[in-house]
Image (tube, rainbow over all chains, first blue to last red; front, side):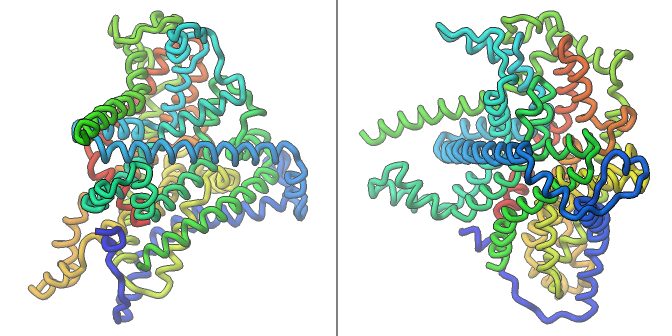
Length: 311
Length: 282
């Protein structure tokens, strides 16, 4: 059964007027909350980004409209561009590593005996279930400079001495650890979603490809991947969105020994600019830039989702 | 020849599977291992790889040491906010999902577009004005304020997920019940609603986990010690004891992780099928 068959087709049916109104009425509570907590602050965010809004305004001074000054300030600031580039590169690395590992684990689950498959699923669920913050703190403990188990295990390899090695004080290895943690936690979603797709491919098709002598890579490239392309697209877009807006892992890792200035990503930068330094106007402008950036990526996702819905 | 080759491949695959399992669970294992080891024994360059000298003392430190940032108020805040969030989000999302799945009306599609868009707005971008907004409503550092924020943040996905479940129950079943003499509402209540129960549970669990784990908004909105939720408490606790007591930090992490882990295991199959169904359907 293909995925499209699962989603029932919707045909327009003639409906009474009261029924139409009831449809709207049912949406009222959710709409009210979303308008109040997301819609209204979003409008305020845009207004704020055009205002001088710093410490003085927090304590009661009237905010002053300054046009695009906040925007020109951040766009001419090297620090901002560094943070933006860093966030983009980091997200790209994590998306690729998550997709590669996730796909391999999904293919593995489809191949191994049932007992091993259950074991893998349990492992994935445990990693997935762990709260982001505790995950970072536990990994931070494993990578601890003096007492970390990771340094100890590495040093067991003959000729290798990692005792007392600090992983977080170097920005490159800081992001290496961050990427490892995020990949570890994101692989379960990717692997289980792709695996769910794999189980829907008829066994006969795979066996036919086997008999035709197709190698593993050929079977994946010519059969599995094209069939699961819709799933891959959605999962990749979601990973891009999630990895661009990463906050908890970076912020908490910085608290475990990272150098703030050299490891800030967009989310942390907004937090530090607005709530840290009290520059709400400037932070607002960065936030608007981030929303625009994310909307561009999300547009693909939304378009894709609506297409799926119509089929 | 081919079958021998295949057996070898299956063996190699099984070994790889076991490695995936070990890598996946090792951090949780290590958290528990440290949490039940006396603090003095955790501060060694050669860590104890297996549990020995089992002790509860780290949990006592976390729960009852009065010099420390207190655990109990954070737990109570977390429980209250999480449960209220699940309650309201489920109720509101249920109404919306029925509207989206069962009713055809003008603007249905626009609503879905807006919903998907809202889901994609990063929380980081919202903190700037959300903080100021809650400040003017005098809802900073309160249970009601953070609950309101969480209901809004989990609603889009909750509606979307429930909509998938409602669509999964064929409308023809209701029609059949109506032919047998049920009213539309009765048909919905007696036929569709029971079939939706697993979906409601899965969606509720999703909301629970989201609210229980959320860190950024809690950090911004409820930063005062008496208003902290567990994630913010844990981070504060870790900052204070970073140099001295990792065993207690791991005990605290365990206390925060355990409820989520148990929830996950209980509703495991529904959870995955629910989330994946939501994902696969978009």
